[in-house]
Image (tube, rainbow, N blue to C red):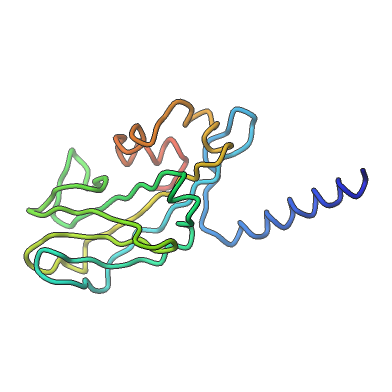
Length: 171
């Protein structure tokens, strides 16, 4: 019995040290009092766009986008475009249509996210910013009081500010 307690404490300590190195945020308190872990990126400005007219993209290293999060959780992405004024703010959930083009994202491989645009001319590298939020499909996260009864579609239809407020993420 004593060995099981010690092993449990060691596993908890190791897990704490391991996850401290990841970009994560303690999300809303769960029904059982635990915090849900939510991952989010900083705002990223592309250094270069790859592709051709109508098919531009750039990749971002995203180690938090594991197969479990992508397949069982919710991945939200946002864009802030220079010169875009949408609903009093400039942050749009992706996919979106703005400045004469479609903007979107995809997880083409685990650990990476690709932001896309179908602009005719190459999109600007300065002034445009992109960000993602990853919500694991784990039981504590799904049971969190704030997310209770919210489907992936509910989260995707919320404004950026509302999602950040709900998940305690700095804007």
